[in-house]
Length: 417
Image (cartoon, rainbow, N blue to C red):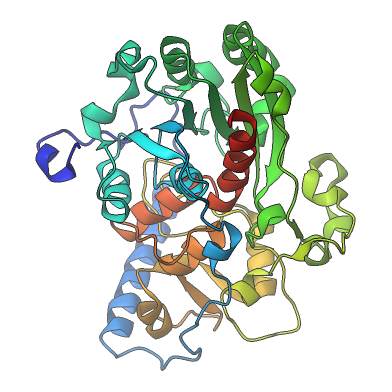
C-alpha cells in the first residue's frame, strides 16, 4: 500500500493552477476602484468572522442543525464481489465510495491533489492511493495493470466543457479525457464508467465527443451514454450529469440497464414553468411517480425548521473553479435567488456547524457548514474530508454524488456477474 505520509516530499500539483498563466484563465477587467471594493469587502468579512468566533459578534439566531437525511440509507452496502476497480481523477472519493458500497474491490486510486488523496486514505486506510506526481495519470504506464483490473471509473476534469467556464475543450490544459481513454485502451478492462457535465453533449463538442472519446473505444466496447439527476436517487440538490458506460462487446454488454430512479422530486420543482424554455433539463420533464420514494428538500434534509417552502438546493459550485480560492458554493444569479427563497446563505461556508452557528449572516439566513454541503452532495457524515474549507468545498463540488455512483455501479455489477 502507498501510504500518504511516505510521499510528503512530492510536489503538490492541482487540477486547478494557481496564478494567471494557465491557458484557460481569462481575468476580469476590473478598475482599481472595483478591486479596492472587493478587497475591503473581503477584509470586513474576515474581521466579522474573527469577532463572531471570539464571541464578540451578534448572538446566534439558529439552533445547530441535526440533519434528517442520512446518505448511508441511499446506498445500502452490498456484499463484496470479486471485481477489481481502478479509480482515476478520484477527487474526494464520490465514485470510489459509490462503488465501494456496491461491493466492488478497490485496487488503486489516482488523484493529483494531496488533500483529496488524504481524504480517501483517512476514510479507507487500507486502500492504495497515489497523489502528486505519483497520482499524475499522464505519467503512468497502464499496460502494467493489464489483466488486473475489471472496471475503470473516473470523472475527468469537467472545466473544459462546463457552462460555468470558457468551454475551450481540447484547447484547455485540464482536458484529461485522452488520458482516461489511454488507460482503458492499455488495460482493456471488462468495463469503464466516465462522468462529466451535461455540456459535454452539447453540439459544440459533438465532434470532440464522437472522434476523441466514442470512436477510439467503440471498436472493443458497447457504449451507453445517458443523463442522471442526483435527486432521482434521493440527493437534495439540482445536479444532473452525463455518464458514459462501456462494456466489452460480448454477452455482458447486453445485460446492462441504465439505472432507474429510486426517488421522485417533482414536488420540489414548483418554479419549473417559469424557467427559460431553452434551458430546460431532465429535471423539468418530470411527472410525479407515487411508486417512488420522495426526495427531501434541502431544508428538510439538513434538519432546518419548516418555513413553508422547500426545494432542491441549487448546484453546489466547487471552491476550486478558478485561480482564487473561495468558500462560496454560489453558482449563478438564479441560484442566489433560490438560496434566498430557501433562507440559506451560500457564501462563507464554515468549517463546522458550531462555527456556522456563531457566525451570524447579515440577512439572518442559515449559514452552511462543510458537513452540510457533504450531506447535500450525498456524502454520509462518516466520510470525513481533509483540508481547508475551500479545498473541502472543491472536493465536494467536483465529486460525483455517491448515491448516483452507487446505482450506476449496481447496474454494472448486474451485467458483469
